[in-house]
Image (cartoon, rainbow, N blue to C red; front, side, top):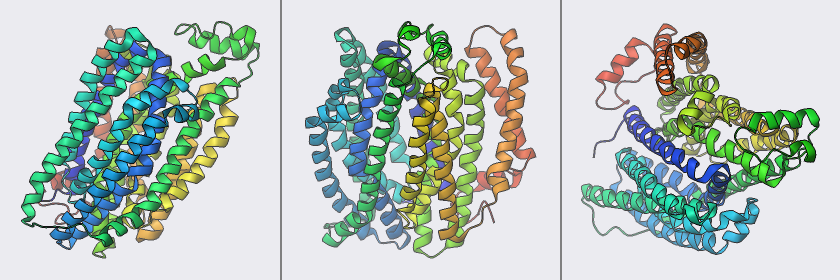
Length: 548
C-alpha cells in the first residue's frame, strides 16, 4: 500500500471537504427557508449536546489510533496495526452503544442544559449517530494513520450527499407538523448519512487489511490499555471542552435576554432587524428583547454567520488531520528536523487559505449571505467573526502537532485560558445594548487568538523549531490586504456594471483571487521553485522537501 505525502493527502481532503462543505451549505440554504431563525436555533442547539457527548466518547481515540498506526507504520509492524484496529473496534462499539442510550434517554435533561427544551426530539433522532460515528472513527483514523486519505474523503462526500437529499426531504415532509418536527426531520437525514459513511469505511477497511496478508490477529489487552491510557486525557479534555461550548451557548442566550436597552439603543436594534422579524416591535416599550428575541438573534448568528464561517475552517482543518501521522512518524524515528519542516509547511498552507477567506467574509458578507440565504440579517455578525478564520487555522495545525508529539494536555490548557477570557468578554460585550450579539464573535476572536499564540509557543518549545513568521504570516497577510484594497475599489464598479448578486459576486471574488494569487508570488509567500517541486513530486515529501 503506497502512502500519500502530506501535500497529496491534504489536497485529497481539501477537495472532499470543499465538496462536503458546499453540499452542507446547499443543505442549510433551503433548510433555513423552511426552519427560519427559530428553527435553525433549535437545529444548531441540538447538536451542542450531541457534539459534547460525542467528544466524551471519540475525541481522544482517533488521535490515539492515528498516532499509534503511524508509529507502527514507520516501524513496518503490520500485525500490530491490525491488532490495534480490532482492539479499537471493540472499545468504540461499547462506547458508541452507551453514548446512544445516554443521548436518547437523557435528551430532556440535556435540552434544559443547552437552554432550549424544544431541542429534545432532535437529540433523540440524533442518538443513533453516536454509535455509528464511534465505530466509523476507528476506520477513518486507521486510514489517516497509514496516510491514505481517500477513504475518509469518499465517506465524507457520501455522508454530505445523503444528508442533503434525505435531510431536505424529511424537513419538508415534517414541516406541516411544526418547527420542531421539521428540525427533527432535517436531523434524521444527518443520522442516515452517518450510517452510510461508516458502512463505506468498513467496506474499504475490509478490502485494505487483506494487503497485509496476516490472519488470526487477536486484540491485545495491553494494546487496549495503551489506547485508553493515551485517549483518556483527550476524552476528558474534549468532554470538558464540549461542556464549555454548551455553557458558552447558554451564556450567550442568557446575556441577550438580560440586556437593558435605553431608548436610543432600542431604536437601533429595532431599525437594524425590523425588516427581518417582528420580534423587536415592542422593544421600545419593554427595553428588552426577551426569550424569543434572544433565540432569533442566536439563530441568525449560528444558523447563518457561523454556517458561512465554518466553510473555510472545515476545509483548512484537513491540514491538522494530514499532519498528525507525519509528525507522529517523524517523532517516533527521532527526526525533529523533518517534523519542524512539515509544521512550517502546514502553517503556511493553512494561512495561505485563511487570509483571503478572512478578507472575503469581511468585505462581502452581505453579498455572500444574500446569495446563499436571501437574508442579510447576520451580515455584521459574519464580518465580525471573519478574523477568527486565521487563529482557528493555526489552532487546528498546532493542536494536531502537540497531540502527535505526545503533549496531549497542552492544547487543552491553552484552550482553557482562551475560554476563560471569552466568558468574561461574552458577559461584558453582549450585555452592552450597543454591541449585543456582536459581542459573541468579538469575544471568540480574543479567545482563539490567545489559544493560537499559546499553541505556537508550546510547539516551538517542544519541537525545538523557529518560525519563519515572515513567510508563514506576514507575506500572506500582505497579499490578502492588497486583495482587500483591490476589492474595495472594484466592488462599486462591478455592482454598477452588472445586475443581480451572483454574477457581480463571482466577478469580484474571482478577480480578487487572481490578484491574491499574483501577490503570493510577488511577496515570495510561494516561490516558483516550490510549485515546480509540487508538480514533479511523486514519491512523497520525504524525498523532495518543500522547505530546507
